[in-house]
Image (cartoon, rainbow over all chains, first blue to last red):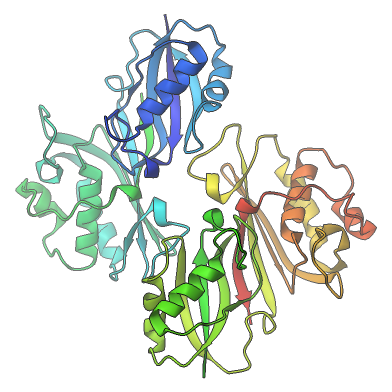
Length: 243
Length: 243
């Protein structure tokens, strides 16, 4: 059987997230149905990780096994012809049988977009988290640096997931202001449930002066109550998965 | 009566365009209804110009007359509270009685976004025109310079509008490649019906080698048949109106 790795871009607005659920349409389901239509096989597609409702991907990675003989360069176009406009396969590669989109992943990079504007902005609406308060971006940039390195991020995790360890390593943080947008990017070896959204929410709360504790102390406290709110899903993008 | 000038951002995807039509919802209608809800007045709002179905605005300008005494700084928030998420008033000013959003306009700047990608891209889908052919961006940049200056743009106009003259002046052209996006901006004293979309379509046809005639000669020929296709509305943004 061939093992196919695909890179996927999607707009998460109209989905319950990556994973199949009973009540609402998921990204996974749409892609599995599209593959079924072109291969006549019931495949199970495995992603690098779930994304929640409303969350987008610029470079989600997933793999599936197939007996189909469709040439690899025809796969994105063929699957895309059966997908809605808000999901697209942007690359496909044939990989070794032991490759697993989740377990083989070494690093991930997320983007989080904050729209700092007095009024709602239709062009950015589906792709950003609107914050109307004045934000001190310089302070947010300074504080964000404390995230770099290996830390126990227990305070930056929502309940509802079971993990062996809450220790993760952040390799890179970037926070930039581009007109009304504040663009945060975080790269790490793994992320806890809602970790990027809690990081974004905490930086917003620091930026508006609602939290006065330093991010360094919040991390060290390992207490979810010291961190900020969970920022909205629609500002989050899974940007890249590294193998 | 007060004369109120508003700046509006909108995502045109779900509308028939600016102007009220019988069958589908228009931007104008939504804003007039919202103003009616907050002032209890039936107002008529005049924009700097119509935009077509699917076309967006980053800075459309319009004005309306009202007897309402709502303080000017409260107007955007009040109207926005009655508008759907894809239309937003981002500024309001009180102007002299003779100000007219259309007749007082001196210059306009449009943006046109081309997505040059092998596959559809969900994040950009509503806000760009997908071109799958390989484009020679350098050639497009060179050729675009011929647009600058005063020309008879008769060859760059769709039928369906009556104008006294087809002579317009283009003050500035910018064409930049940002990853898969090719971003064209055009500033001029006025634009004929579909002029920016025909300019974009002609540049695409030149960039893919379908048109070999120089843009200089196409303009001089004043013949619609020599220009390229009309690029899709969803790539077009009215960026700014100057008074």
